[in-house]
Image 1 (cartoon, helix red, strand yellow):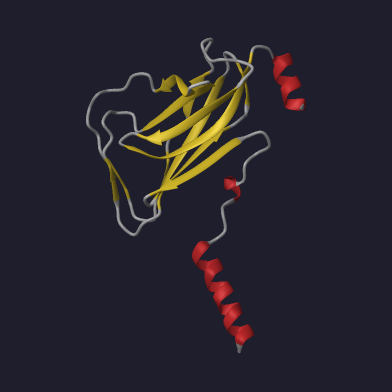
Image 2 (cartoon, rainbow, N blue to C red):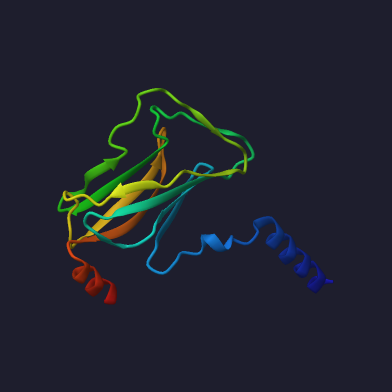
Length: 170
């Protein structure tokens, strides 16, 4: 009887939690970060950890409502997601750049249904000449109007393809 009860409990847990979709598994070299806070989960995906100055990188952000109630996200502008690039200094993390740099200043709250997920259109970032190179940089994603959760990953910028190839080999 105990074995039957344990088997039923294991099966019900598997059914309730489900299996992550295959797309949830990171590709080699991909930066994936997840964070959750107060019933909201956020995922950041950067296709490569080693970036080349001048290239365009499509960054994907997904939000998931983990609660049984709809969530209203009070976005203060037309941008629903912010990406921020940080560099480590002696005093802590210093903001290098934030995307989008400009957005329509129209209050545009939006709703995330209970237990639903939303993947935002990829944000195409150009690795700018002002991005520091040769050091770890932190990239964070957050929803406009909800500073928590904040998903964060580490990327590195290289000046040449040769430098990037050497870094990837180590």
